[in-house]
Figure 1 (cartoon, rainbow, N blue to C red):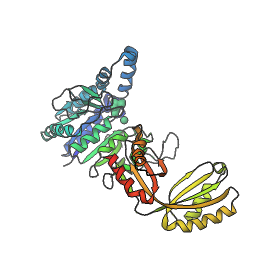
Figure 2: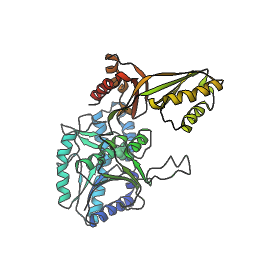
Figure 3: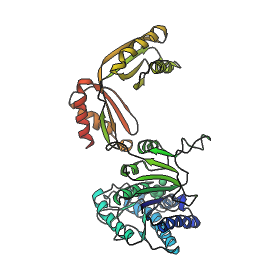
Figure 4: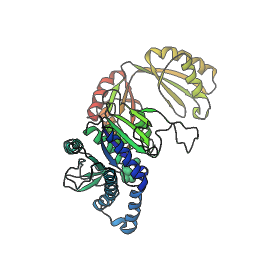
Length: 406
Ligand code: ASP
Ligand code: MG
C-alpha cells in the first residue's frame, strides 16, 4: 500500500470529461489499495482568464489581497468539481481549500508570491493524513495558501507543483505524480526539433536546471521539497492511468544538493592564452579543447574574452597542458603567448533560488571582499556559481560562503 500525491495540471482537467477520466484514474489507484491525495490546478486556462477579467474590470486599482482572492477561485472551483467526480464514482472525497479547518498549506502574508511556513505546514498536514486514514480522498487546491491571519495567499504562477512536492514531503508520501499535457520531459522542445526524444528519467539537478532555463513542465522551486526517497514522475493525462511511466525524476543525490557549497580538494591551475581578436576566430576553442581531450586532460572551466582565453585545469595536468598548448601557440597565428598561473581553489555554490534573488552574487562576494580575498574568476549560471580564488584563500572563502547559505 502506497501513499500517492497526484497533481493534475490545467490541461489534464481541461473539461468535464477529462476531469472524470482523471477522477477515475485516482479511484483506480484507491481500489488497488493505495492511498491518494489529489492536488489540482485551475481548470484549463482559468487563471489566465481571471487575470484578464480582473485587469479589464478593476485595472491598476486592484490590491494584492483582492488579486489573490480572485486568483484562488480557479483552484477553489476545480477542487470542488474533481472531488464531486470522485464521489460520483463511489469513493468518499473531500475538497480542501484555505477556508477548511483541515487546510495544510500555511504561508507568510505575501499575497501573490507567498513563502511557505514549513513548520506550520508540516503540523497542519497531519489533518490530511487523518482524512486519508479514514479512507477519504482529499482534493487539495494547488497554488493557494493561507497566511497567518487566515487570509488567502498564492504561491506564484505555476505554484501547484510546489503544493504537490511540499505535501509529498510533509505527508511522507511514497510518490508524487505530476499529471500534465506532455508524455514527460523531452530532450528539447518537440515543436522546434521534431526528433526530440522523451527521457525515461532525469535527475532532480538536471530537472531543476531545465526548469529554471524555461522548460514549462515543472515549477523550478517545487523540487526544493523533493525528498531523495520519494519517487516522482511526470506523466501525460491522456492514458488516464497513474501507472504510466512518463519521465521519472530521481534523486537528489548527495547531501542537500539543492543548496550547497563545495570546495574542490585539489589545487587548480589557470592557463591563459593571449592573442588578438580571438573571439572572431572560428575553431580556436575546438583546437584547444581537442588537444587537451586527446591527451585525456579534463577542463574544469573555460572563459573566452576578446584577447584572451583562460582554461582551468587540475594542477597535476597543468604542466602537460602547458607544453601541449605552447606548441599550438607557436604554430597558430592568432595566438601569441601563454602563461601558467598560480595554484587556485575552485568553489561551487548551488542554490535553486539564484534565478530570482537579486543581488545574490554580491551576498557571496561581499564577505570575500571584506576578508581581502581576491576572486580570480567567477562564472554563474541560473542555479550555480563557480568561484576561483587563490589556493591559500580557499578554505577561508569556503567557510564564508557556507555562512551565507545558512
Ligand atoms: N493555476 C495557477 C496558474 O495557472 C497555478 C498552477 O496551475 O500551477 O498559474
Ligand atoms: Mg504548471
